[in-house]
Length: 125
Figure 1 (tube, rainbow, N blue to C red):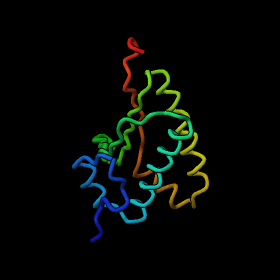
Figure 2: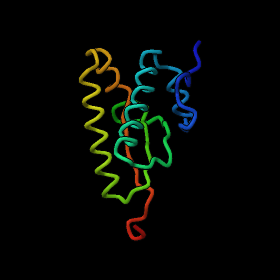
Figure 3: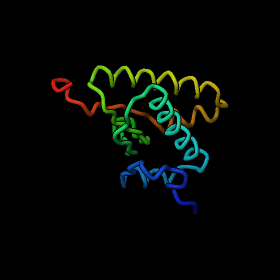
Figure 4: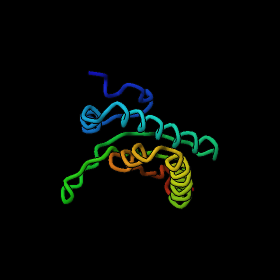
């Protein structure tokens, strides 16, 4: 069996729950997650947004009995600016996903989500 972390950048913190879920996913879905990480990082670089941390966690929804890999990105911005970045990243991801074949786009939607969190206290900004 392939290493479930194959291709995941070394600077990404993979929580044990995410590692377990990654091990259950197909290599093609794991490759999409790696590409999604690259899209998110590229968006931050292009927009001069400093990333302080990126992690993968397993996001479980007990009501729907589903679980996804959630990519969490922390940025050195106040809350409002971080939310603007989250929206910009969302547009970048949408553009990228629209260029994927339908099966890949469907798998990505089924198995992943993303979030952006501020690392700057608004009062201190």
